[in-house]
Each structure stands twice: as structure tokens, then as C-alpha cells.
Amino acid sequence: MADTLQKLENVIRERRVADPASSYVAKLTAKGRPKIAQKLGEEAVETVIAAMSGDRTATTSEAADLIFHLGVLLADLDLSFDDVLAELERREGMSGITEKAARPKD
Image (cartoon, rainbow, N blue to C red; front, side, top):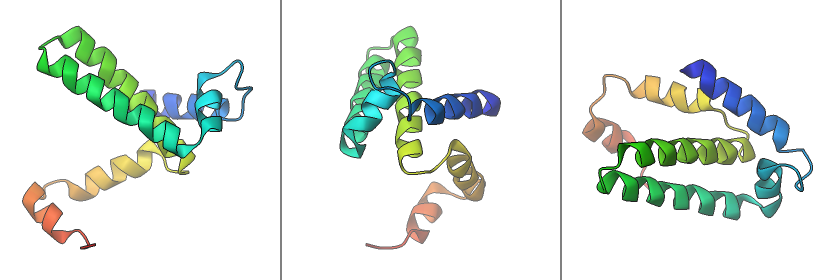
């Protein structure tokens, strides 16, 4: 599974600098982080809608779109799926309530 995320991340990073006329990733990247974040939000909503309808196939498809767009946003921030996985590993075995209480207050 992690290998699939690594491959996806590599493709996204390569395509970020491609010609926007021939690459969706490059086209989205050229529109800037606000547009990337907007697309991520749209995919999240579509995933929720599919899940609420109980459509497993659509939920799987939308979740894949969500992960893809998350990868584009992470790349734009010079972050990786490994960074996210490291954070999940850091939280392993910790109650969600404890983890949330330990977050810095804004």
C-alpha cells in the first residue's frame, strides 16, 4: 500500500512541472494552492455524499480522487505521504481525545 502512495507521489511531483496543456496536475498546480485546496474540498464532499448513499463503488472512486488531490496539495506544500504516515505513527496507541488535547492552542 505504501508503495502505491510513493508511486502516486512521484508521478504528481513529475507532472507538477509538465506542460499544463498536457497534464491535469500541472494545470491545477498553475492555478495555485487555493484552487488545489478547493478541489480537495470538493472531492471530500463527493466522498461523503457517496458514503451517505451507501454506494461502495462510488465511495471507493471518490476516496481515490480525494487521496490523489491530497497528494497534489501535499506536493504544493513540499510535504509527502511519508510525512503524513509519520504523524499517524506518532499518534499510534494514543487516544484521539488525548491527542487532540495535546495539540497547541491557537
